[in-house]
Image (cartoon, rainbow, N blue to C red):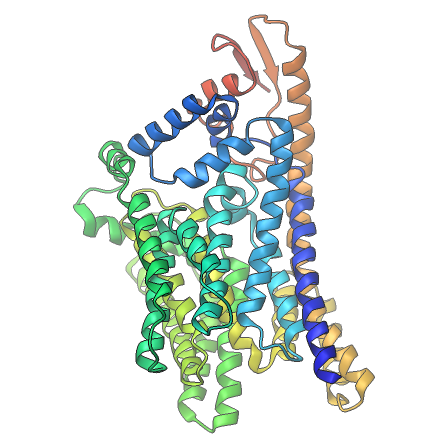
Length: 532
């Protein structure tokens, strides 16, 4: 009976996680309007089949190999109704990412509600500097949310198929779909399959299922079709590199720019915050249980890395700048970056020694997804979404050692850092209840209170994003009304979106989009636009 109730509770947690993320993200997506490349790909949605496929073929030869995502993107941008469906679709994808993250990190016990809260917070805490390019932008979501959602589903299916808990048909299908998405995710799909094969052969000493070669082969074929697309080489030939000196100079330039774009800037700030806290929490717990001093030393090192990461931008603000900085600043940045990677790797290896390989695989795939971008002349924050998914999964697995205390400390520290002193009271009450946790009501109340601070921080971030997109949507509606009432005169006056951060590029930011904007809304190319 108890086991049945536990399974039912776990199912309710999964459903609740999916619905919470879906509804929260859809509340924002409801106000997301076309911008940037939406105007370019949206023109395809009203073409006939032959013309549509012709555009896809031309794009493959001259832009990139992401045919699958651009086909879906073009269809969904073809009308207002289909844009509405795109918003629902993206919200469903985000819900599935949280759900599959929970499935991969859950041990189906009393920790499930805490892990559910963690995944909800992880998706809600995504900063606008990341989501404006890769989540709350329709074309961006097709290029980054859709591939990550397919990859997470593929991971769940591959894990279960390798464990002989299910068949291989769905696994092979998702191997193909994931391999056909984008460069980063297709490489990660192949990498995941290889890692799972190596674990089965070298660690479990078991024979490989024949069907796994189909999954690997088809994922690899999809990856080759994307990575080796003629359009990638054509774009590389016409794109001026940001720095002269060849590949090594490009790598050095991109590494040094990770100061602001990746480590210290606002792009991933809350994500790094909760991941860096998860590592010492895990290592301290393992040190106490295993009486292993090396875990304690690594935990102290992780704590030091977190402290320096938190304070360095306050000590020297040049760490947040692009371009060259003083040598001591560069050395401090590299020390924090290497320390961050080493302590997370140590914790992942420690988990693997406990026969939990998911954190280590997530570390390899997450770090690899960013290493492959170091040779690219165009590295945007949107390319970091796959890293976020991988490191959230790693952290979720690590916090299982002490999930509720972790959620309490992480949420209170983040809230306090954002200026909410009330977090101290929440911490004190939850800690007091935890002392009396042998009493059932106290245990349940403490568990709930432990989740509240981080959920509150996630809600704050989501609300800020919601407010920004809602205001921009009002201005976009006014612009649409003016376009509909336009009588073909010489000048059409439109309003600039008031919150530039809550949306992607518009024609008044970049003239490249001017002609596509006019074509998307049925305006003559000769129409003069006046943005006020």
